[in-house]
Length: 446
Image (cartoon, rainbow, N blue to C red; front, side, top):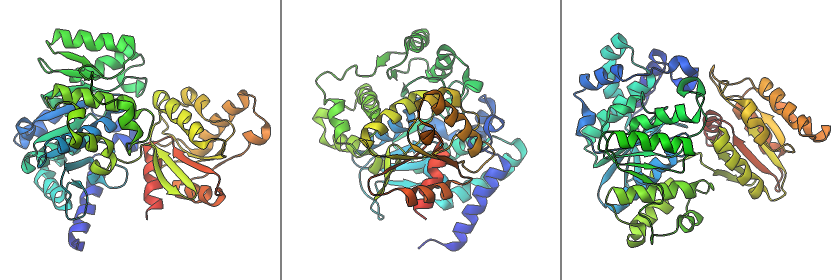
């Protein structure tokens, strides 16, 4: 039974964390602190816990969260009894989702993973409160320091670390990993990382360390050239996704039976399989345990929001993909999944995202319930409605279809409206922002 007093202290710690250091996810660029000096100072204050960890570092425009979860799951099953730390962001429902440990054995709650304990969050904030109030590190620097500290105290066997934004100046980049992975590179966060593929690639390639091998996913030619140049300059062996995997299990075969159902997961599985080879974990074909870990990665590691079915009747699917690269695949999969059924879109975006770039990807003949997540970073639902509907008109659809939209001020209200309207043959899709998806999940599971 959870201690009510501990719950209250934990909630107060999280409130304090957000009040002291607003997150990038909530306030945008003002919550982002590029550079490693502050993070290095914080780590030194804690005794440099990251230096005791065996780490794997993952960056990428899309796919880095899925690859992190799949790799943690596969490693946990490859080495039974091992404990794999997993640090990802953002969280969807509970702050503690960011920091977890994955094991092949199930815990008392029947899960293969456990989040950082409420008591661990409370203890960390108590130990670090004076440092935080005096030095004012960013929200992500605090959570990264918390993850390193927790994993070191728990003596995990390996820690899989996902970058927050970019790579070169990301708070996680104080580690020297055993392997670096760059999953994909596309145009996102252009106001911070640069407005060309090459510029963004240089930021992501900043996680490559001297002599440390790197695995890259399928990258645009100009991005791959940057990765090759960086790896060569640092004496780091570079492996392309799929390399070393000849004769191994076909990634498509794994994906067809996996609990991560998004079509993009085939590429991610190929990247993970390559990483396993580089790490000396062997091939999937010779390890049924690793194959199980890959096929059940979402359940094993607790990954959510990737083409996740939230309801069967009506069928409700959510996905956090929001940039052009991710959304184009998601919308193709949505149309295929709908198979002629009417689609009801619950859709919201962050205000700093490029609506012009993505609005042409959205289905023009769906019913739209535009909405906005909480926080100042969200684009007002009415503004998003105007921008998307104008694109639908430009594509020449009938006015009856164009005007079939409404703007709703809260995600919960939008989800309720969609559920009421959806008959047994309709399909509800929730997306556009991880924060819209997060609020939808929290509302449906309340």
